[in-house]
Image 1 (cartoon, rainbow, N blue to C red):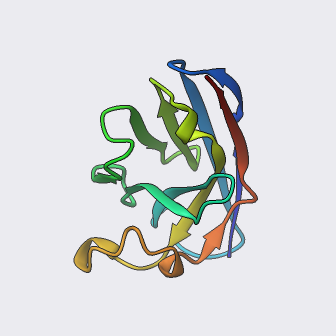
Image 2 (image 1 turned 90 degrees about the vertical axis):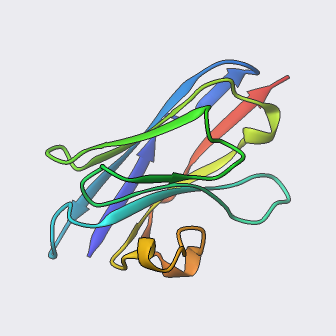
Image 3 (image 1 turned 60 degrees about the vertical axis):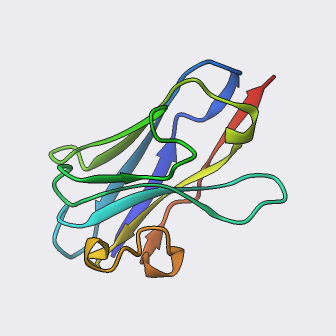
Length: 130
């Protein structure tokens, strides 16, 4: 079982930057040997895929909407996942969630499918002013 907790959300000005963190802890399992992702849900919107990162941090897949502006990384030793966001837009405002999957989504291109993720954090709010 994996427990996740996001942090770092807040209010930022359009064009500004923000860094989110997600701390993972496990009661049992492979430690940090799992793929992770960031999703977000804006007001009145569906859950939206943001980025996926594999178990060792060497591979990533970004949503077109954030590619070039957001950067995902992870610290394996600290069991932390990060999302560095820059050039923020009002449409980036959302609750951001980190998630864990036991599946190898690279094989099926299912990174965007939230049903393939096994654990979720409670989310952290990002607000972007115009």
